[in-house]
Image (cartoon, rainbow, N blue to C red; front, side, top):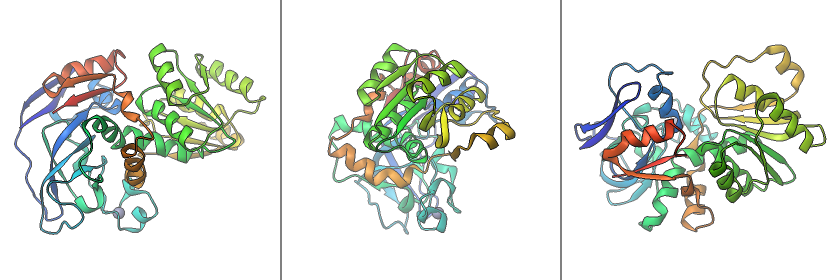
Length: 340
Ligand SMILES: [Zn+2]
């Protein structure tokens, strides 16, 4: 089969790779309907995150089950399924509490090699969620978004306690931040402020439910949020970048007693203890337990109440994955969908 491999920063190739097979009785093998490039794939692509030799890429996937191991009960060949980037059993105490990304049996197996024609998914019963019947083709991008960026934006909004009567600010206008806007809207937030200086991203944020756009960042951006909230700061702030600047912007834009939901993969972030102590804000986040939200998100998508697939503003065949990375790296595209 064909699949993407990152050889070195900036060097993504699509090449022949061995077809995945059932290795454990709890595995499934799926044929992908579509895949995509993640903002987090850009960290190794840019050389900020080291890779240990040629690395198969991709961890967002939807598709049709082709084969299952002898112990798989909940999914069958022929079903269309959505999964998430860590495989989880969905039965341990941590999973049952809704933190499947921290499953005691979690496997990163589903986290690599998803930009390919086929994928082996470990712990299939816990990891994969079937859709009700075969979805219409136009729903595939939205279901693909659910496998990571929508689930991650949703978790960020939940962690930030977005809800009725609340002002939510979103740091980061990538796919996760934009879908954090959509999630905050669905959760009933009263006012949703996106930090963005890119016209196309501002436009999509407004379509997803943002009420205000702030172009300033850093301390100036924080001052704008204070202006909009009677000097108090937002109740809920979504942090969807993962840098020192973005994390401090999120904490400083939050009012005392408010909540920061941080989902940008942290890169060299160091929190100043004294400032944190006196801020009085709640911090909660990390790798999103997308699996917790999948049944609800699949339902919202299949009943056409949300359209998160709009974050894909570039569609290319898998063979042109390298251009898909380049376009996102240069911020010419918000998110690239790869057809398989
Ligand atoms: Zn578990």
